[in-house]
Length: 499
Image 1 (cartoon, rainbow, N blue to C red):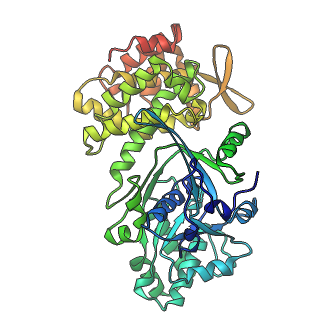
Image 2: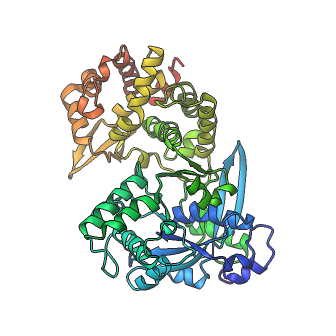
């Protein structure tokens, strides 16, 4: 079987959405920092889809910032790759294979920096995209004149300064910059760091003014599970179906969202948004952030202890159980959707919840509950406490399903220290407690025992920022569920729900 190449674009394959050869000649409009699967499975996917419809008509120059790994796979495949989309949509199974021709070149910063700067001065360049992980957007001392600068912000500043100089500060040569790193207000924070670096490097005041006024740094939110390259036992039949080998082949779920904060100018530049409803360009992405944080992330967090302690290793396995499925669905629709601390149309929240259920049931995504329990305490504090407080304020009653989620959390955190790490046990099996508050919560267990631990944990303002025992009856309800879990099982507590 031959390796994927541009020749594949000339063949007919009913199992593949294939772009025409002409897309390889489209101008380069995007500079992208990062080669990872999220960028290939989301922004590059959207750009490719738009190119097929004639809505964007541009390709992507990718910057590889690290020396780890090479670019051979991209070079050998003419920068082509396949995305295999698998999952559930509106309760129905969906499968789609798309050949992506959005990437034109992959350049390595360490030895091709001059080529990157040459592209920075290109008249066709309009957009910068990044995903350099959360630690990529941070301020470090960096020399913008290095070849290349060390940090991602340093590299981006060098690109912008070179562009400024090449066009003599022309106001119409600014760029739309969209980071996708998973931190709140990623665009705002990146802009602040870039300006601080410019000041540290004593760059001209006129440039800093151009930087601030002629470029658009957009906050954005990405949401799509892209596990990346499938296991060998799954990859082989996929390649048989496609008719070629693909060293860059990736899998993704059906659902996708890229919410970008921007004005009409930004919307005009990001014209690929016209080709997929998953790309949303709007002046305020707060609504999308809240829906994701509360209904997806909050549900994951509240359900993780319940599902894991019930013996389900993955999200899909838990969703196959009628009791856990009922808990997840009722939690989202009866409690979370009604208590999001943001002005949200309830039907929109219910529709989002239905999408979440489809995603949780996806048989092609192996999402482990033990991974979701990482930093369990902090996730509850950030994602769930605002929901809990808002629910109590609106309805003057205890949200039973959130209370059960807290009880499962307390049971999960009943552990011990061994060799500097923390563990718990369920049905005689040891599991890791990867939580930065593990020592503190386990100490509360040791000091107070099962009869007093609920009060001790819920009243600890260092954990939650508030005393949760001041919520009328919340401590009593959580304690009742915890005793049921400890005496019988989580499933017994699930069956005792009053909702």
